[in-house]
Length: 165
Image (cartoon, rainbow, N blue to C red):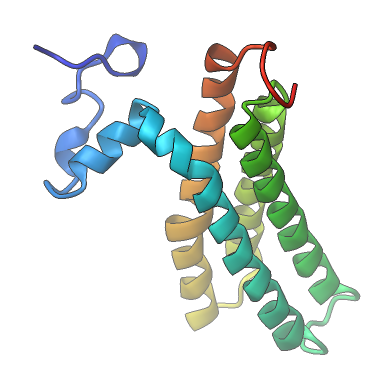
């Protein structure tokens, strides 16, 4: 029996063979928005927000006085604080199964996409650029995809008849 994937595609078409054998069950659960995964997602988003908050303090200390642009460190810290706020709100709204989840997740996805874009394009050549590229590919772009998928999933699975509406 074949599993149904997004838009009726089979798993080979979705590229499941690209994932290592040990990661396939987790990725399949995530792609199907398995209820077990959805129950854990608010806590995971909060953990990511806490980690990002620690990064904000580091960034504020490191960028202080280094940049040639006025308020450069404030700009990056402010963007990261908006991302943290978006993750916390997304987590709360997902937990409450609120109808407001979709727009908040979409805005947060956009913030992570912008963060990746500007990190890579404004980084200095050399090690800084490679570090920015790594954080974009392994942190910000996956978060963008996850939050965008959540924004698409929410209207189909959350009705206006529940707690936190």
